[in-house]
Length: 288
Image (tube, rainbow, N blue to C red; front, side, top):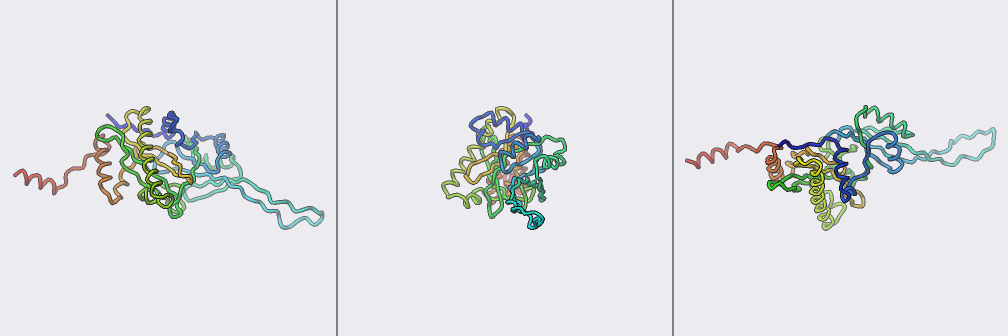
């Protein structure tokens, strides 16, 4: 039976939101249009705008809302007496895309710039989460959950993705760094808190997979992209039904990747690793 893939981020979000206990982990996420942009910018200081379908963080944009102070002009009209105007404030909207940043004075102006990138494709707008940082660079976490050999869901791998300098996304394919989860948590939590967070991540992955399976019964694996905010709350930014497993090869403990590969082979994601030449020779020689 073919493995089921769900490419629409919106479809996966709706499936998870059916479970009230899991909905608290999902940042406010809506379909993009100008009215929604205006409403979300009234609610949040930062939002992300991302394609409904896409991988490796391609097409993801960030908007930050800032209040700037406008100072009165130094040169006053000497022909009439008037008191200097007080400092005025104005809201500006900073659009960050790839490595560029542009400023706009209204949501309408911002929308015109966004439409040039969106080009009639379905996009989502999501409440921005202020990520914890590792060495001044934001990071999020990837939690890999797979069907094991008994057909049950199991969290088989976790890693952290640290954004490349000046990038708004953490993706490894966009220059991000891969580190162990404990390595990034230890700068923000004590050992007990870090262990509790890692346990919550493992459990959350399994529960999310079970909920998604209720709607899409032929899925065999998921990858959760999880943010941690300054209060140490967990937020599931995205769920991938075709998660990368190759990155787990980077860790010194090769048993993690061997298990991931073994499970993936059992449900047809990858081919089983063929015997090496040396093992074949040993087998033939022993059979005498």
